[in-house]
Image 1 (cartoon, rainbow, N blue to C red):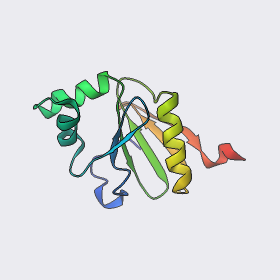
Image 2: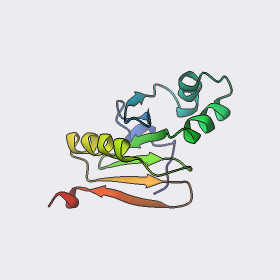
Image 3: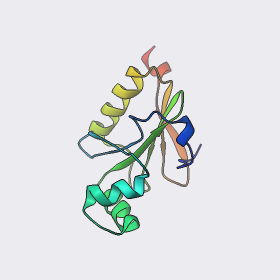
Length: 114
């Protein structure tokens, strides 16, 4: 499943966020692009989003069983992956899926823990 901003009704409010390169979650109250402007300090939301992607940030959202990480620039780094796994484990989610807007891949699964 490719990243979709239309998952609003299926998201957990506290994991709909931006994930910094250090693995820190920054919750999104409205839309990722709007929050990107605040985080990057750039008024144009598309330019702000691209700046965050270019500097290692990830868009994060989730459904009932899956946590989604999106960036068309790179896969989650070790700090980001560790934070994602902690969150998925805390929420008893079944998997983490990375999406680069062209394809997606499962980067962690509960089955990995067995």
